[in-house]
Structure formats: structure tokens, C-alpha cells
Image (cartoon, rainbow, N blue to C red; front, top):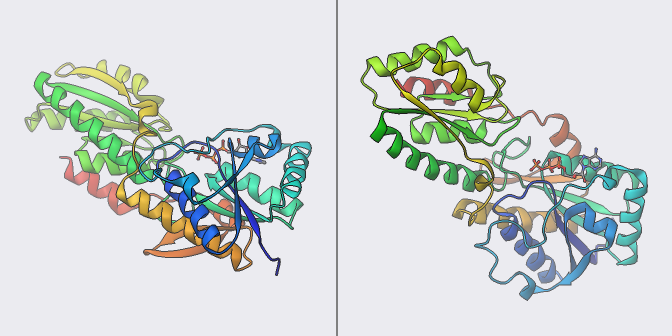
Length: 328
Ligand code: ATP
């Protein structure tokens, strides 16, 4: 088993609230075990540019409550090339680094696994950090809870104005491949309809539901649309529905990047701390090419390969059915 004396940590892909608590846990757990820690700025780009610095316990003071990531994040094309990976490897070796904790989504893990297969002397442990909650091997990913709460807060406000004016709002939320935020937010806000990438939307059915709502004396309606819904996004849907529904004034709101920001929820602070702590312990135990996740409230290790090949996270059928029934 390779002895680890210095590790690095980076955040990559889309930022997610909870990354900072995770960085803090990685740094402090490593230092507790007598390891040195380097922080790599801007994800894989920082590895290629040798943009890293030594971290100590004070480097991560007062960051638990911060959204975003103090290490910055980036999408890095050169890391997809052999030349980029070789540069990253040379920089890691030159800095005496034996292992990296990568916090990110499936793209980040794909890069980490490729890198680790080419250079197996660098240990790699992944932490699922993405608001999309779409990774196999962890019931929740870092940032999902905070993002969902941010969406709920925004929709509650929109409901107030929708109700005052008897309006129908189409609200688009993040989730290109995953309807996780849309579904949870829809249940929490009593949306009249929730449109998800995981199921086909029959516009006729949506219109019938909205008409039934009006017949049942609903004064406003909220339709939540995940951005990856196959019917073409909130604007196109609103246009199609406007042709057939005259009793509501129809408006569209795209929530956009505000969903990524904000102070992490208690859940994400604790999840980030647990996953960061577990990632360092796994590395010290000689593990590599693994992802740390949380299942049934226990830390679970899943191979990166399995996390990626099984990555089609399934939305719960019972939640979808319940959402439809409770919104009548
Ligand atoms: P999110 O779920 O928030 O989008 P992500 O980790 O999936 O996060 P990506 O932009 O897909 O975000 O991936 C992050 C980075 O991982 C990419 O910018 C790239 O540097 C690296 N990466 C992705 N795919 C590969 C690959 N096939 N080979 C090498 N590196 C990759």
C-alpha cells in the first residue's frame, strides 16, 4: 500500500453550496493525520497551470457558511487531452503530492478516473459535488439541498404574486438531465404540474390539468419545468399553452444561476463535512478510484467506474405519482 504524506484538493465543474465545508473537512482531517495539504485553484486547470498553494488549518477558517468555492472551479478542456494530463501529473509529482480529492460531478469523475488509470501512483478519491443530485452511489449530492431550498423560497414568492393576479407561471429550474430539483421543489410548493427530463410531457394532458384546476376554483397555477424537459423549455411551453388557455394571464420566470449561490444549508454543511472527512480517511486506508457517498445515512464507497456507468440516477416513481395526486 502506498504511503500518503501529501494530498491535494480541488473543486471542478459547476459550483455547489457545500463545497467549502467539504474543503475545510479535507484540510483539517488531513492535518489531524499529519499529512500536508495543497489547495488547487480552478479545478483541473490549476493542476495544469501549477496553480496551487499549501493549506493549513487557518486557510479554511470561517468558510462553512460560504456558498461557491474558495478554491474556485472551472471547466477545463486541456485536461481532456493526453498532453494536459501529463502536465498535471508532472506538477503533482514536482509538488510531492501522492493523492487528490476531487469534488465535482460526473464530468469531474470521468476525468479523475482516466487520469488515475494513466497514473496509478496518484491516489484519487471523488466527492459528489453537484446540485443535480444525479450520481449513483450517494442518495444526496453536495449542494442539492441548498439549491432546492433556494428554489422553494423563490417559488413561494412567485406564488404570492401569481395568486394576487390570477396568473399561471411557468418556472424553469436547473436540471439538464435530472429532474431532482424540479420534483422536490414541486412537491414542496404544491406546483400544479412538474415537467421533468425523466418523463414525457403530453401538452394536452397539461392543459386538461390546468383547466381542471380552474374548474376547481384555483386562483393561480405554478408549472415547474426542469431545463432538460423534452418539450422545449418554459418559454416554448408557455407559448403552446397560451394558445389554448385564456382564463389565466401566463408568465414565465427562469430562475437561472441564483440556484447555485447562497449559504449552504445545515444538511449540506454536515454532508460536506462527512464526505470530506471520509475521503481523506479512505485515502489513508489505501483506497483509490473511489467515490465517497451517503446511503441510508452511512458513508459508502463506490468505485468511480460504477458511479459513472450506473450514473443514470432514477427519480422515485412514488414521489412523481404523489406530486400529481396532491396537486389536484
Ligand atoms: P456538473 O455536474 O456541476 O456539471 P461536472 O463535474 O459534471 O459538474 P463537467 O464540466 O462536465 O462538470 O466536468 C468538469 C471537468 O472535468 C471538465 O471541465 C474537464 O476538465 C473534466 N472532464 C470531463 N470529462 C472528461 C474526460 N472525458 N476526460 C478528461 N477530463 C474530463
